[in-house]
Length: 319
Image 1 (cartoon, rainbow, N blue to C red):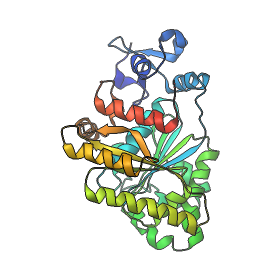
Image 2 (cartoon, helix red, strand yellow):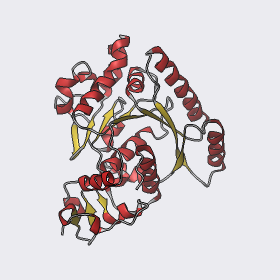
Image 3 (cartoon, rainbow, N blue to C red):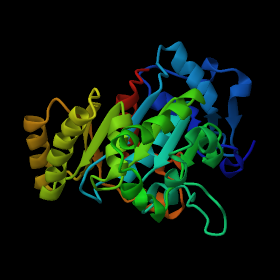
């Protein structure tokens, strides 16, 4: 028996978590003995590759997909959504990579993977012209089959380096294609809160764009602007528009305005709205202080429940 901190994986499901998040009853008979690890508290954890095998047996698809979290308004949960859903996807056995394009590097900070000043750590700005040579060796490992391409302030210079429309269209897309060739299942892109080169190129590369919103007027304005810009960018570059989803990211049932915002979203954006609302929680800030996400522990809380349901909705996990 081992302590959870001694595991090779930080993001790993307990057997009880997996069973509770499933519509089916799952117990240790679903796995071989070497697929389970017993912790010192007697709980059993399931290796991500074993969860993947179980999902495949239940017809869950692991088709390559690029998902961006975008809103031109900042501070509404883009980074929290990116790091939470990506770490949950890793627990479910998806080979996952985060591309951090926000110059503030919040997603990189969440995993303690900011580029080091004393090293030659490479970010997207450095490699977009030669991703086939630089990308894979530039990824920082979070755990087996879970990586991040970190960001720093230099990514702010993408606006000047991606002036050519052809480069703007292909920069992120070509990078994602290298990840697809390297057998990744998922790429999550954390975009800055602006309509700059990083965001435009991400839209061109994305299969799905998720727009997190809150109940303030600036957030809703950001939603309208992001939706219109996705249409405009798709037309300008003659590409099929990505699937668009809207995520209400800071729901507080104690506030009347939250209910009013949901009513507005259901009325105006019903074709896009994800039927899962992320409740406000102090668990997010607690986790980030430890350079991890809410899924690094096996404690039960609303934040984990909400992002688990969001992950299953996004990835069509139906067990």
